[in-house]
Length: 220
Image (tube, rainbow, N blue to C red; front, side, top):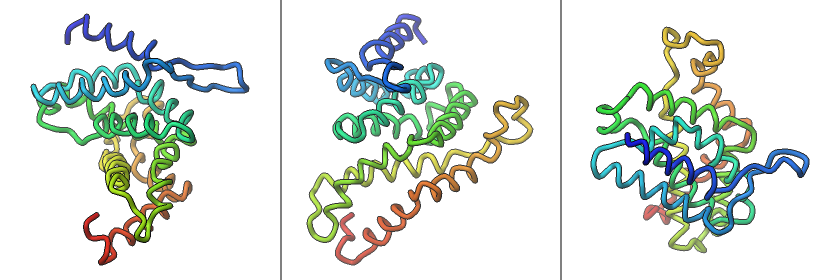
């Protein structure tokens, strides 16, 4: 991986997305109004370009930089209520970051990628993290019953892809988990399911399953 590429991406994450503010009674991520959305879209373009050449440079670097924990989840939590466009773009990036191992991953540091994936799944168990992304479903759910718009299907599919990806991430084998800080990765799947139930996300998924399964909604 070229050093200049790493530096450019790191600089972009640290400046063009925004930064943390601790002055309002807690930590809140404040987006860069001029460049945040463009930068999120650029991350997606970089990953798609990597796929074209069967590389995973951007994915690996985002994992190394803890981009999900440090930037993308805080952005989603901070702006899920009043910037649906930004939330949708962040979700597209995160869906790509959490995809199961592909051909390029098998050839380029697969152990590192699976470690990143487990960390991503763990980071989504933090308070409000996954709930922020579920807010994308607010409008589609309000328009069920014959009032759905064309874009609703895409939004629902996007959120379901994210959930599917996270569910597919396997636990860490006990034999490879030597550090106490990684012990939680052994029971990650069970803990994730409990979180889905506790946060009532399972109820939303069951509702969507019933709705999509109806005869009149087979085009979904």
